Amino acid sequence: MLKKSPAFDIRQLGYGEYGFSIPLDIQIQGKDTQGEDFNEKTVLTYISHNGASFWMANSVSEGSELKLIIDLPPKLSDDKNLKLIIKGRIVFVEAPKNEDPKRRVSLKFENKYIIKDEEGQYS
Image (tube, rainbow, N blue to C red):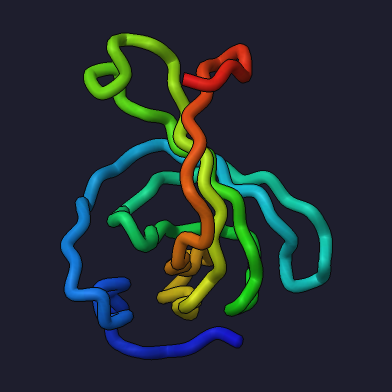
C-alpha cells in the first residue's frame, strides 16, 4: 500500500547509522504488485550497510523482496566493471508526487553482498 507522508529517511528504522547519498546506477529485479517479474534500471539515492533508497516506476508492495545490482564506480573497483549484488525487503513505498509516476522505495538488506565482474566472476 502506498503512503503519503513527509520524506522518509531509512535511518528512521532505528539503526542510528549513517550512509551515503550517492547517485549510482542500479538494476532492480523482483515482482510487481501483480506478481509479474520485472527488471528496471534506475539510480540509487541513498545507501548504508543496512539498506538503500531509490525512485522506481514499477509498482511494488511493502514486504516484497527485491534484488539490487549496483554498478560500482571505477575508482572503487580498480577500473574494473564490478557489480555489487544484494537482496532486501521493501520497508517503505512513498506515493508518487505530482505528475511523476515514480515512487520512492526504501529497502532493508537481508543478506550479505556479492561482488561480480561483467563476466559473472566473483571478486
